Length: 98
Ligand SMILES: [Zn+2]
Ligand SMILES: [Zn+2]
Image 1: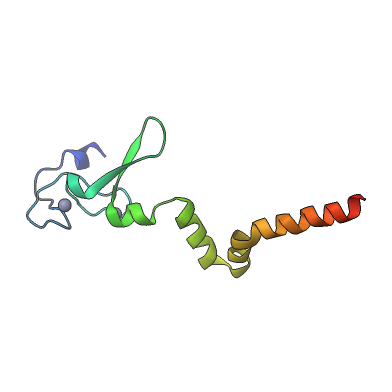
Image 2: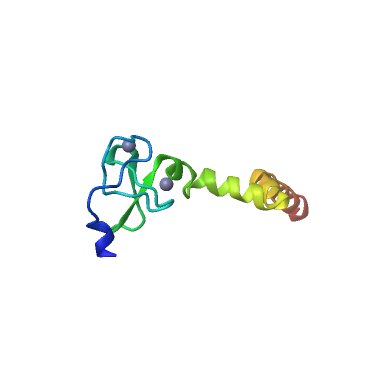
């Protein structure tokens, strides 16, 4: 592990072909320069480097919803109309409460 961090020059940014770098995207493993990488904090103490493509596709509310929609139709429907189910449940409760 330590040797990869200290690897000598020879890596070049995948976007800027003439920019030497020692950094890599922690998601796809491709070398990128400092400008092309963003820091993503995974805990309060440790962070990872992400390239722009991976940062876009990384975990987040939108990515979570997108993967949910792709994985199952019922899940996507539920993600979109959960509030409607809640409203129906509340109305049913009101109708039976009296
Ligand atoms: Zn990447
Ligand atoms: Zn770059």
